[in-house]
Length: 180
Image (cartoon, rainbow, N blue to C red):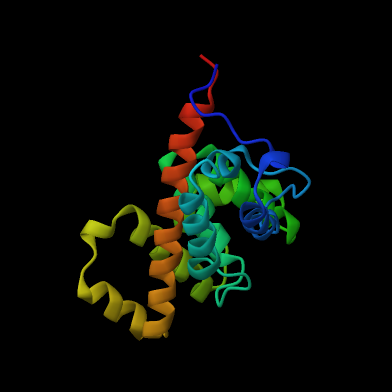
């Protein structure tokens, strides 16, 4: 029996149903809710916070287009979060990215075949998420010199923060969903 039991969808109170409808719009397969969300529903403030943070820090549409999901996929890949990795890949497939292109991004993220601005955004966002302790003011100035505004950089921080949160939640909940 798994440690965490997802709440059956039909047992959700109205406020949680509203949050789930917001969350459902972001799922690759909107016909069934993620078990992660249904576990989070056991702590309504947790679910509410997650859904609201996702809407604010990782908006759709994003000023960076699919770059936010490419960064999310690479962050999830780097920390081994299968659920977030699959979500990002599914979202990118919906907008026309093929599997072999996405495999190439994961195999060699330093050689992303994107427009220069998009590649820099993705690389910097992944650095924010995975190497945040090594960043210096000069790194921001370099990005500013490459044409990114302070608002762009703050949005990249928000995207990285969201994917750090999402990968932590998904990985931890996954461990509690495994049958023992």
